[in-house]
Length: 290
Image 1 (cartoon, rainbow, N blue to C red):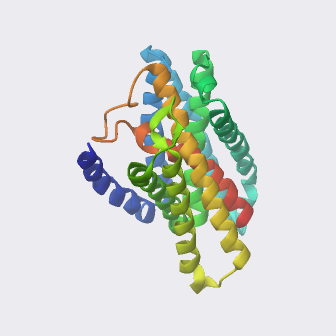
Image 2: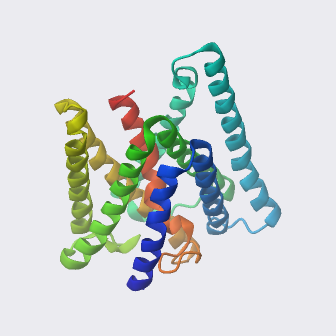
């Protein structure tokens, strides 16, 4: 299993990094959208939407606003060129406020899982509400990962991805080596408090490495400290995002959301931490570097 995970990661990571650096923004957004739709298909199975028609409606509910926002952004960019506007972000800033609902949702999910894991695990919700939650988190993942790449560049996008990957790897290996205290045994018996501390420590290392890298652009202490704090909090949210999807899988009685990725399970199993982390990270980037 571990060998399969490593082989799959060694194939996927270079492809993802290449896509971030080489694809134009609109094609990168399309790629993220396709990933979100694959994850959405797995989500419909996890929450018990068995009708193909209803699954199609759920996908359409994601595709239509994605297309609308894509063409709206294209229109703004064209208008900005014609009228010589300095920055299209100045005229699409209302979209930045869409980061508030998913950030609040993930903070609430983290608090509930931390304080009442059994209550969350036993929580019964109607399928329509689970579908709404899935729509919110997957749409926001597409929107803010796309905007991070489009407005803040490839390097910061890759930093975010490395931050999440490093946290996952650190939590796994440190948890295996030193893990004694279970983080949420009813939800995910394999996760430990020591593994969580390892993930948070990796966030500090990544942030310090980013600060050292940006020395050539002029060192600003407060921004450097802000990025360290943002990285730590982003990783913390990502850990509880992983636990949130573990709750949904346990309620459904399955180990993995799918089987498309050897050694990793499904798309949701691979991007669960990222889904939770990207709205929080994007909101932090806006505050640090508007």
